[in-house]
Length: 197
Image (cartoon, rainbow, N blue to C red; front, side, top):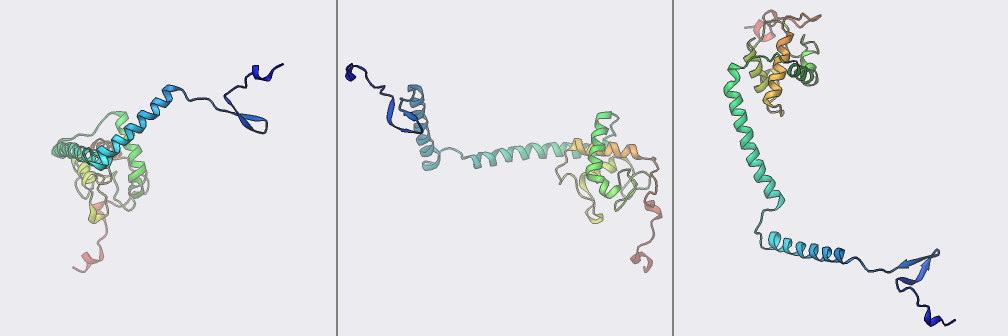
C-alpha cells in the first residue's frame, strides 16, 4: 500500500504529550470577526475617552448622578420636614412591625427592648423631655438631641418612612408599664450643678 495515498489529518500536530495529540483547527470566522470588532472598539474607546477627553469617564458620570440623586433626596427631606408637625402615628400592622424591628436594632441599646429606659429616657410614660406629642417624637428621632447623646437618625441614613415607623411603634409603648422603668423625667434627681446653684 502506498503511504502517499493515505493523507495525514492536517489538523493534528506532530507532537504529543501523554498520548494526546494537539489539534490545530481554525477558529470560527464569527469569533475572529468578533475579536477584530472588540479590538477596534477598544481602540476607538481609548482615543475618544482618554486621548481626546470627549466623553465622561465612569467617575464623572457617577458624580453627576450623585448630584442628581442628592437633589431628589433633599427635596424629599424638605417635603417631610414641612409636614412633620402634622404627622400622625400609623395604625398599620406592617408599619408598626417595621418600626419594632428598627427599634429593637437601633433604639433598644439606650431605651431597652421594652422602652423602659437605660441611658436614654423611659419611653412608656408621658413625662418626656422634648414633648410627648407624636410630632415631638418624630422631630427628636429625625434631628436627634446631640447634647443628650441622642443621634440624628436622619444623619444615620434613616428614611422618612423609617422614622415614622419607629415613632409609630414607640407611640404604642405609651402606658405599657414595663418592669423597673427608668425614673420619670420630672422626678429625676438633681444633678450636682443644680444642687449648688
